[in-house]
Image (cartoon, rainbow, N blue to C red; front, side, top):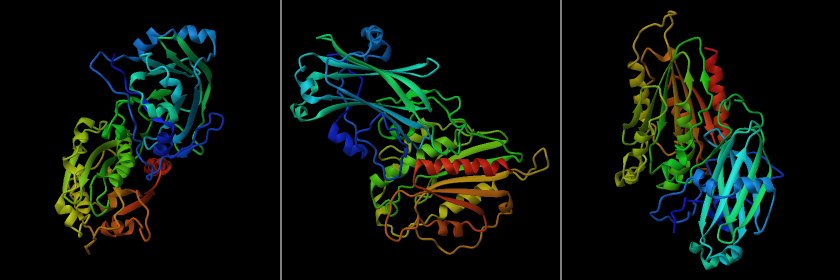
Length: 445
């Protein structure tokens, strides 16, 4: 049996549980936002063997796709095709989803037909197309599928616009096929505070089906870069500090809570490091506040070095692990964050710019809720640089509970007299609005 590219395969019930959604109807596309309570889908995939893996080009070359397209819509196998484009991700991209549902009994009776091929093509108004496919080994089907629909799913990042969608299903052994072509519209994001952010991006970028673990959150498979330009009169030195502490106290010893936080904060960290600063520089670091050390640092102003950052997220490495000592320690403190900010401020060269004006030091802090940390009483910060510094603090609210406030007020007190702007983040839309606010305020400086 040939090696098969993994294809998102869900029984219908499993899909609804994983995504928390009902059927998505193409006729009614409404936007909703990724939130910090949203689970990362657990997706079943088709098993592989050791033969050469097919590619999109090879699968389309084998199937008479263009011939079917010329013949028009056709159906020999029962199916349903559903589309949606109603979700904003924490990567600040709109998510398009294409689903094909086939009755389980229909596939089980073809268990001797080797495999079924699914082909998808999406074409924008300029004639630029994106293609993807899936191969289902029919021999791998379980008898229990006779009680369910089998669902094939592709996801992509899309820019607003109208697309032509073509989907085909092919049983090569019997030569039966389905073909469907219809329009697929992706609405603009309502009241978008960053309407130029998607300018120049590829219209439709399919996600890789091979992502797992940290790659699922980071999206190394996507090449498009957002249009995030920051032009300021005053030179700025931006430092993006990402709290990656897996505090047992804050996250209640749960990797689930920690992953919810990372699924929102990690894409935001990536995005901030794609910002094009016209008059200044940018450095980035990830911190473990409990272990009191920098777990990742990058000072070249380029996109994040994912190969290095990823190692800090692997099981048994860096902040990916909560120690027994940490589990017992109920007096954890975030004071290391203050110490790092002070250290970085003192390291700034005391020199003026060409215009005779010193650079503005901008910190962008990405952190989790701090309700359960202990905040000792500390004197105000004195570095001599306080007037030339501003802090933007994005606190990701990953859980809800009675009496939880996030602890942002304590963070502000800990960093006095620094100028700090605090934002509570619960959704991808919140991140988008904060980014717009940061660009607007710094752009006036």
